[in-house]
Image (tube, rainbow, N blue to C red; front, side, top):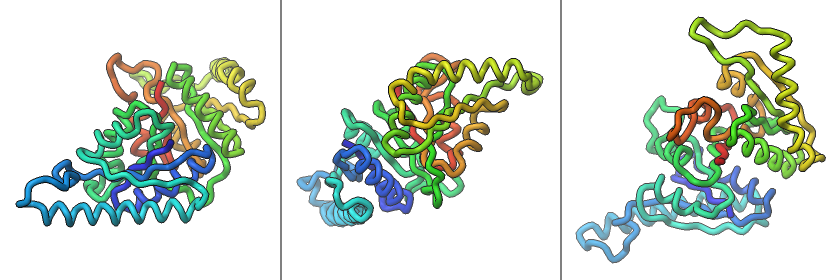
Length: 278
């Protein structure tokens, strides 16, 4: 099952369309979910606010119907259901997604603060969900038929690689595995060195070898780029169908829920972003 959280915003509808595409690829049912406060959800609540609660439930029904319609128009063959969830949208979506294959949300909702690139719900879900999350910004107008994945050799990076291989296989697209091989030093970036770059490329190819055996039909491009991982992955993902990263990479502090790279890409990914859990 795939769950998509919607709130009536344009990016919410884009997320519903993307989730319908993914459900069709995986031959999985799709649940379109929207959250309202518990007192609104509870129809037997205080009579004092009954009219307000009824009005808000009607609005929620409209939001769900619009997103359901968008999903069905994308893929009439996908089984689509709707669910009205009680409580804070972040907690409600995270709990509803327990056991789901994927949780999909739009990058910014109707309550987003002007100027912010990622809304609080999208950020909270990406940071705390126990399942894989896809954050949908605007969909690429002419995707180039490629899944991009960040490869850093970490445990979550390894699962992101396997996830990305499986996704590229589902889509029948090329996979571009990208490794940013030099990190900034206190005095600036280390100077580019051809031997170091070749060593990094060999390491990346070794990292990919086992995944390629499991997915022999996927065309793979291994790319090593000198630069900061966020900038490298942003550039690599321009026009891609999807960018996949692990939730935490090497060098992250113990106890951190998300690494700095995945957090930055929540704001700056130029295409839908998959945050893959370990």
